[in-house]
Image (cartoon, rainbow, N blue to C red):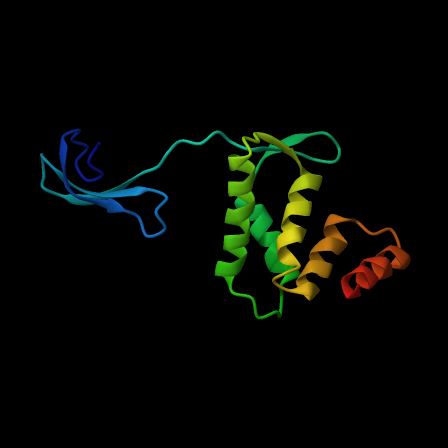
Length: 149
């Protein structure tokens, strides 16, 4: 590991432990050249998940884009960000556990809605209104009626 201060390629590991959320190994290192201490993280390399959009084009699964959509749906709702990131973690883990490397945006949206309804019904309706692209008020009303059943 190259030292960020002097560029020396020799360093020793001083301390090693799991990161806070157990998704990486946190290592404290000391440069053999200048003695500078720095932290590195070791993570398992994962294959990217590709999302196939409705128009057929493909793009990488983007946690931040999904979080922005959820934040928009939960504006002025008392929902902690940790709950939303947990929802995204759950969706991503579900995709990875299923061995899915390519998924349609429709499936991702359905997975999010399935989890969001138990968190907040108003946020569910807001997210659904964008995701399902309601064409008129009748479609929107039908979705609201299905929530009351």
